[in-house]
Amino acid sequence: MTTGSLEPTTPSSIPSPSAPSPKRADDITVVALAAMPKPSEAPAFPLIAETHPQLSLAQMKSLIEIDPIVAKLPPDEKDRVIQACFEAYQRALAAFEHVVAEVAWSWPEANQFADEVCRRLVEIVNAYAEIEAEMRGETPRELLRLMTLSQFFSRASLDTGAVGYNPLSIQKAMREGNLREKLTLANVAVYGLFLQKIAADPEMVRRVNQKLAASSTAGFQIDEVFLKSIVDTKMPAYVQSPIVTDHRIKESGRVKLRPAAPTPPSQEAEGPKISEFKEPSIREVRAGLEDYVSEEEYHAMKPGLASRKVGGLGGALVYGVLPGSSFAQRAVALGGLPVVTGPSGTADSFFKVAKAMGLGPMIHQGMLTMAAWMIPFRDHSLHEIRIVLPQFGIPYSGKPEDFAQLYDEHFTQAVQERMPEGHMPPYFLGSEYQRHVMNQLKPKSSPK
Image (cartoon, rainbow, N blue to C red; front, side):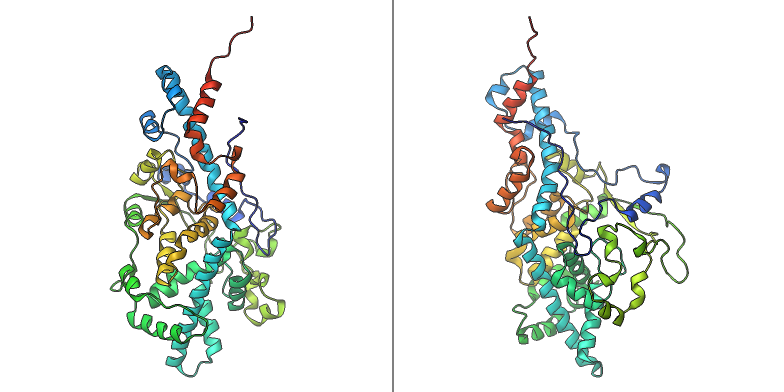
């Protein structure tokens, strides 16, 4: 067997239509981290904890089936083999994270889920805009549709993938953008239009469904019964999965960043202009809206946005997982699984809204979409995404066997081909690797 480094692989730069080779370092993040409170002012926990190598030997032994030959070794030698296997397993898990995200980014089913979520949300936006037009009467319908599109798919944000306010830019990003941009747009609509303006109002749901039924392009309706089960119409609030709610209420840690500079009364952010960044990162590149529209289209909309300044970091929150929390400790007990910010409420929301829009059968491939969207930018780990799947009938325990394959055999093969040494993580806990480690740890005979 050929052995080699199991250092985590870094996915190649994920393409963005207007930034073919974006740098991985993010200028905004550098400024943000420079503005962090002093250690004495901040909670004592890491912002990002990629792995938990501090497993006890008892925890290791509970997760590994010891090879019969290894089992006959003296106790201390056997323990060294087990520990070496788990170190390799954890390195493989970290590599697995990056490889899964890289493969999923261009995987057809992952992009199909993103496209269909966006398409159905746009159909709902169009139906909602028609209802608004009927109520207002005098507003031109196409103008109102574009206004509604901008209202529910945009945010004043420099989040990675944000494309701004321009409805023409939003429409083009929906059709031609990369997966990160499409899901960022959909995320805004899910938490804004869908959960606040429609889902919490049963009468609006009924009226939207009437419009969808009459549409020649929709091909679906909102599942009113399921929607009612996930939305508390009194608050209104979205009902999250218990694992997400418990973590956020009891276990999430957060650090609030200081403003890098005082925000002027005009609310214009201070800092360099977009055009002054020689190599804009993925996060910054969409702040100028001319990227997705022609110069004529762009200037016909809001010409001032092209030179909008970046900065104004006051109030941003950085999330981390408290090492002593039950979620973190469970990740340790499962073999040192990578964690970042806790169970993914975003994945939970997307899957539930997708099911409400008739996409229940696509949730498993939606897991690939979430992985490609969130892992490369350290929003969540794969474990934090998959942990919400069981409520949708997709088994996941976090044990080593769950990392032997992912989604289907074709996706698994594509991942395995990119893994260090060509092996999935559980291999490093198996008999073959145990014996390899045993042979490596044997004392070499001294030359005579």
